[in-house]
Image (cartoon, rainbow over all chains, first blue to last red; front, side, top):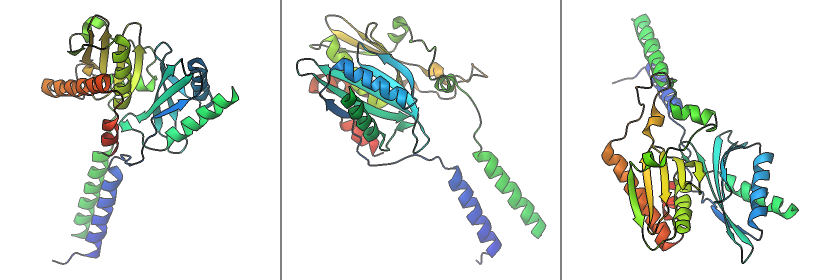
Length: 130
Length: 165
C-alpha cells in the first residue's frame, strides 16, 4: 500500500498534536536530599526557615512550632511550577543540633528538580548570618 | 474528492483539539489550592474516627506523632497540623485526615476526605470516586509504613521507590 505525501504529512501532524496533549510528568532519578543536620538551636533554625519563606516570596500553608512543621508554597523560578515544601524540624537540645527534613512536592507527586539543594544552601547561609 | 478528504481531515484535527482541551471542572480541592488553603478547617475528631485505625503499643505519643509526620510528608502536601489536638490533614489521593490519639496505647485514626472532589458547580457530582476496598488498601499501606517508621526508626525506602516511578 502506498501512502501519499499528504496522508503522511497529516499523520505526522496528528501524532505531533497528540504528543502535545500528553501530560508532562516530570521523571527523574535525582536523589532528593531530604534531611540535613545543622549546628543551631531549634528556635534559630525555625526563624531562619521563616526568613527563607519570606525572601523566596513563599506563602505559608501551615505552621506549627510545637511540632516543628512548616509547609509553604513557592513558584520555582527555574520550572515556573507551584511547589509545596514540607519542612519538618527536629531538635536535639543536648547537642544543639537541629535536623531539618524536606520533601518538596507538586500536586501530582514529588518534585524531583534540585530545589532541595537551593533550600539547604539558603538555610545554611541564613543561619550563618545569625 | 480532495475537498472531502480535506474537510474530513479538518474535522478530525478539530475533534482531536477539542478532545485534548481541558474541561474546566473545579472541585473543592482546586478551590482550596487556589486560596492556598486559607480558611480550611481540620475535620472533627469524631468524623476522623469513622475511618480506619491502628494501635501502636509500646510507643509514646511523641514517637508516633513524629513518625506520622515523617511518613505523611513523603506521601503528600501537609496542609494542616496541630500537635495539641493530634490532627493532621494531608493532600494525597484521596486527601486524608489523621488523628493521633493520646492514651496508654497510642492509636492513629485515618479518614478519607473524598468530599473535596465535589464539583463546585454541581456539589452532587464527585469527580473522583474511590471504592471502599481501594481506600482500605491505601489505609493499610499507610499504617504499615507508619508501623515501620515507629518501630524500626528512620526508613525512607519507599521514597526511593516512588521517586523512580
